[in-house]
Image 1: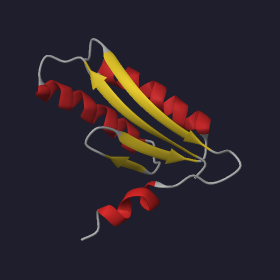
Image 2: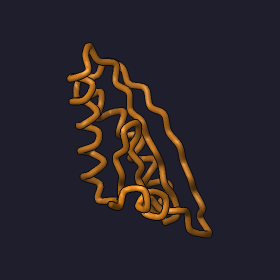
Image 3: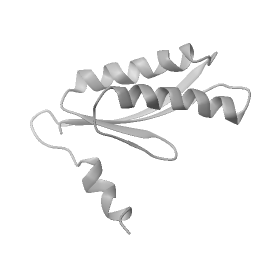
Length: 100
């Protein structure tokens, strides 16, 4: 992997059920992109070989939230990019903490 992003999408919704509905729509969009991703309690991490592809996904997440009914959306984003090397993958970072 050359890049990863973690995105937390926070739609401005009237109640928790609507907030979860919009966030679920964003996660469905991320899932449909076919990249490796991990949904955590606060953010979703996405891995890929292309920085530009990941940035396009991050940008589209805002549009997905608005189309799902959010009047306003905030997003908090973390990016790791190493064009000439390999980043630590989701698997290397968290798998050991989720095995029984």
